Image 1 (cartoon, chains in turn orange, cyan):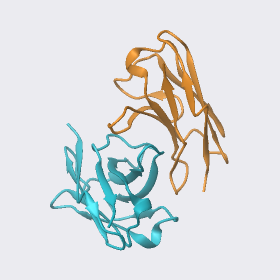
Image 2 (image 1 turned 60 degrees about the vertical axis):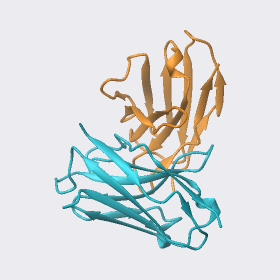
Image 3 (image 1 turned 90 degrees about the vertical axis):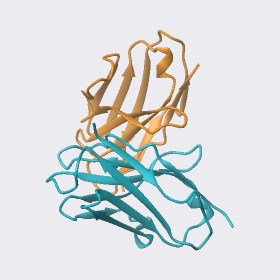
Length: 106
Length: 120
């Protein structure tokens, strides 16, 4: 199985801050990586797919980069509605696997 | 508009079999390339992929749970059903279903989820 390791597990930030979350795969997954945002009591919502493609309707302050084993999700200017938990997920091979999550909090 | 909605029991006893249903709207598993997966999330913990079924009947399972899982589709009813045998308290989680197109490597959209508690 491909292990997905996210860091940090939590980050404290303020409105307007630039936030960067990393995700490392235990083996090469090319660009088959997605990022999700999950708010308490809600289902995850995809933000980024194929490592850097912005899902329709997602604000442009979200961006993704990386390939191979190292990936990054960046929020360029944190907004109040961005406080949530973020997950990466590899889609390169089965079993599909998620990272452990990064909680972005005040 | 594409939506998915999970339904099933809230409480299951240990050793029982869980059956959860995902009702699809706005798309059909009779269409080439369509797929539906199940993902669960224990309270306060991370997401775990369980199973996936495609329009052509191809089934994929998480090996860590494979012996306990069965995913099926009822195309006329536009539903996908997941059964999990021999339930244990560690299986307490919110169970989500989500659409996954063959051409893409992500799940979107997701259902609201259904909380399943395993307790005697």
